[in-house]
Image 1 (cartoon, rainbow, N blue to C red):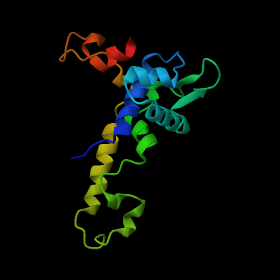
Image 2 (tube, rainbow, N blue to C red; image 1 turned 135 degrees about the horizontal axis):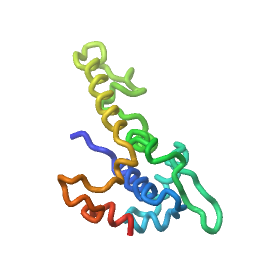
Image 3 (cartoon, rainbow, N blue to C red; image 1 turned 180 degrees about the horizontal axis):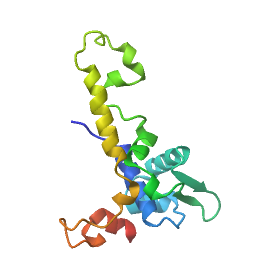
Length: 155
């Protein structure tokens, strides 16, 4: 099974929550409460998003976080890589590839690069702005209220 880490999943959810009200500065406590992500985890993720340039941190009494760039410029790959590092489906594609004792005899390694790039490209083709759009017609009547996460984050 290919699966995102919990942190990457939470990061996408937090970024969607912020992107829904891009003009607002959102505090980590209120974001954690809205998303039901534990505050220490939300704070860690928000810090990683700031470090990656996806969010801006605002200090002071009404401090918090806002988008560092437009939601239409942030891909799901950007968010995942800010939390988990490079998208890498197999160990032989990373920095530790030389540690693999099968590199010289592996008949599939070269194809894993192709597969890895396809997955990365697919994740990169989905923008944060698309993640917060209303529900497609084939799912419901197109109202945001039909999507539990989005309606929960808006209210």
